[in-house]
Amino acid sequence: MPIVTIQVTREGTVPGADRTTAEQKEALYSGVSDLLREVLGKDPADTFVVFQEVELENWGRNGLSVPAYRRATSAATSG
Image 1 (cartoon, rainbow, N blue to C red):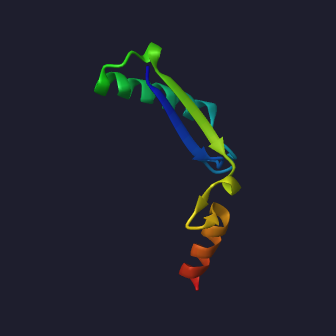
Image 2: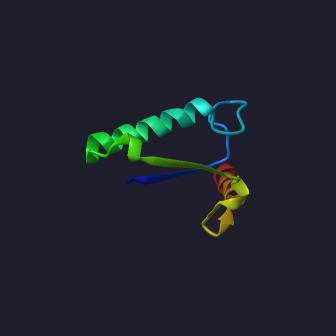
Image 3: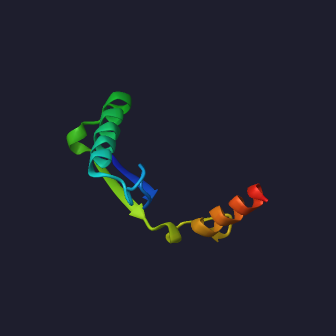
């Protein structure tokens, strides 16, 4: 029984969106299940996909929160 966890930051994927859309999540659920069936022969009925959206401030990179990291790298490349 495969269990797949997908974690993304809570950011829109298209202009004006503040989170992943229901349609995008459905495509991921279907795509992951199909991939596991094709590659490993796993039954989609036995496949669980967990989708987690995490606030940007709750992710860190290089010792900084992601917003702080983006500000720092933006400042470094623009000036």
